[in-house]
Length: 483
Image 1 (cartoon, one colour):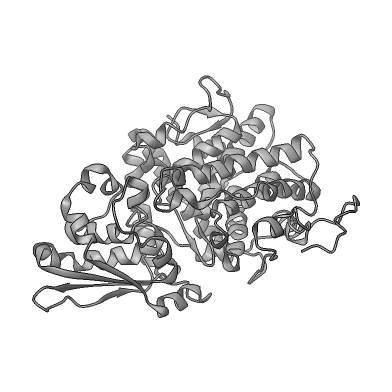
Image 2: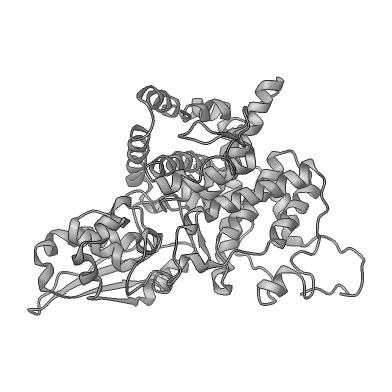
């Protein structure tokens, strides 16, 4: 990929892709009211996902210091806990909370991912800096400034994902969480353009995590803390570049033989559909009703609508036909035994079977107790999943970004239900007016399910007025979520 002589020790100019990221995080002025409004809801939705995850011991065990006693009084807090940690470990903990239940926002394109994963790094660094400023008489970041950094992290991750498929080369999408969080965290720490490029170069040199833990026969819970791990690594790179002055690697991407393009991306440079702006935050998808892998969200909606017609006739079902997008067919069409929670919440057949049978889909429905119901696997065995080319076209259309699915049930007597089709879920931009009340309900229920009543009251008061919330110092906002 590089015209630079591999034998020469002369340092080349930094790769343009890294410079463009640094220029964007330092210089771009966000003037989209819609982006800020959506970011505010994204923050609440992510904190809701984090509080809901606190009901799961497997998540909670990841949230403290890496080794017992390694706390940092006055450091970054972990919402819903009493932990005060260094910003690196706090980034891991917060990112893990937000991601654990697969219930935070989503971005789907050539690469899929969850841009609010970046809040792990952003909130940890913001709280650390805010509390430090409070002690030293400085100026802390406001919630609005945090929203601005989140918009930029969403944009970096999402714009890379539009045309560049990391999953096609076996790498997990959290590589883009690490990229976006590294750039934004370095800027938040006061990094110069050169320091941000340096941090980003280290992020690329890390290469990418394999997707092994997301796919049969190895699906497992690492997928629920992989984004937290990316946030942790990102803050490490940012601190190294800004506070310790480590050297950068200007052709980390393009170096012949040894650069990321040649090693990991089949020799191809990255492609971009649009310049960085605020497009991703404006179009991000919220998971509001069901903690389900997003390619199946509309399939769950279809199944919920069919539940009254089929719940009493389960033994009479001959086949359940599911039509989905190419990406959905490729990553969540899964047959055979499902070993654990992580296996089930990435199986479209399981995510359709549960609502057809029970008329619901909750995080608890992926647990062993519900999964032991023999009706679920019996119904999965009668399902046929196929791609609908229209769903695939609409999925990649930049003016639509649909995630369509259809479900139809056929009975042994030759009768059938109607074919239910949903092109885009309630969390889609085109259904914002319908979705925001659901999002706020999700948020309040999550807070009441984990935090004391006086904390919940203070939180609801703080978020009731967007201008008041925006003006809050971030450490005061996060104090509301601590125990």
